[in-house]
Image 1 (cartoon, protein in one colour):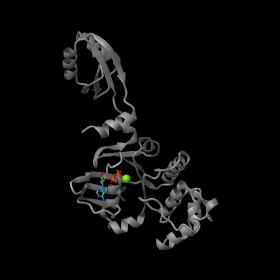
Image 2 (cartoon, rainbow, N blue to C red):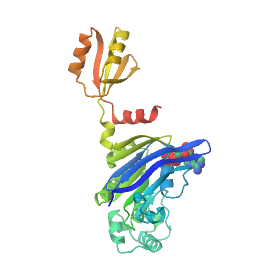
Image 3 (cartoon, helix red, strand yellow):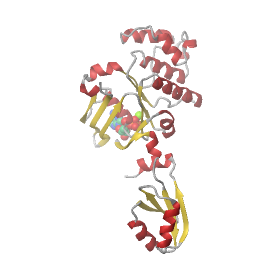
Image 4 (cartoon, rainbow, N blue to C red):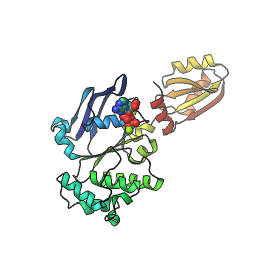
Length: 299
Ligand code: ADP
Ligand code: MG
């Protein structure tokens, strides 16, 4: 059995002249927690809408389960929350979940376990209308799990919650992942994706800028901050150096980005041997935040 749950091939959505999702290709495998990370308007919800069959793609394709199931069949094995939770306000948590099980033709046996999982068992008999937004969101997660899905899709599940509510949802997502459900979490919050996800897809203007391990986002070789009295000499030295990629000027310093590992000791010796007099020299590692911004700001 293949581990591939979902594959996107050049998936594109245009709204008139606006391209909301632009030739997006990616693969989701079982057992991971994926973050779909990007600023507001980057195409996260549109992407989720397409794979959930509520938005028609303009071009490109997607396949669930290596194409072994039709989208309609596959979606029975997926749980998704892409809108604000909506339940019957005058019915209790228990009554709402029981109704959902009947609609989805699922067994009601797991309801107690699910309500305990989302920490609402004590409130099972309270009306939905009396719930806080965080509790409503947790009930929605329980409802999305009634069919024991292979993949749980969540679109900005912590939006609008207070810090305690945010913490509870993130903890719950981690617990669900530990229990073996693959997760796809759309978020505009870098720290949320860092805290919760194993893998990340970075989107901006519908274009994918990064796909890979969350750790990989922070694994760069860093850069040197340099100033000299002879910039021309420095620039020709840097331009010819095999370990230096991009060179830019920030404030009074040149920023020389490393494309491979290079120690401060060796690099400073090389500069000295080239006869360049330094007035400033420092090795830096960009923060995850600034890397995310540079991934999504430029181009
Ligand atoms: P995100 O979820 O990352 O915030 P969306 O997928 O909601 O981004 O939106 C991506 C882009 O598509 C935005 O520029 C948004 O304004 C536009 N968009 C989304 N839905 C529609 C629509 N129904 N009609 C026109 N433009 C839309
Ligand atoms: Mg959105």
